[in-house]
Length: 173
Image (tube, rainbow, N blue to C red; front, top):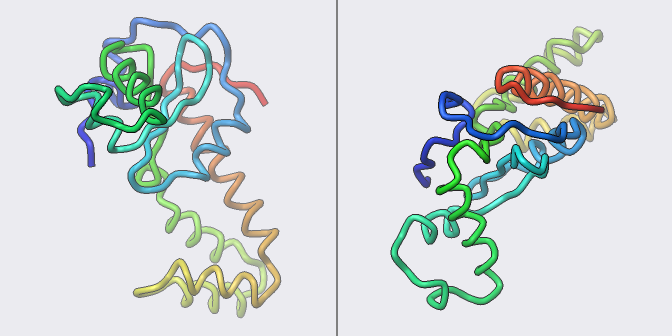
């Protein structure tokens, strides 16, 4: 994991820029749904755009290597990573999948099911090793995929709204 300097959502003390455009909540939620290891997403407070860079690009930005040491297709992303590192206050890290706690969302979904038998069965599916795979298989088996994705989307929306409020960011639907 790459160490990010001064631009995590917990460190707002050095904000220099105010976002001039509100962030679209649907875009923020969509980006949060796509989180995976090795990629980091940031909100550009000047443009309101969400940008993403990889571990490798952030390491390249923090190192002393020349752009020519990397494939041409990465140059623009490494430059972006350097901007993220250098322009403290312009970029703020979006919640990562570790901040989101998808397991807790799955747990809450299981507990929210009105059918007690189904609720217990789904809840037991998420215990132990392989919980995510068993959960996905179970929602398919029971035909409740749409309910799950709607529940998850609403949970991510709540997380996104709270993140925006905590960071003084305007958001629109």
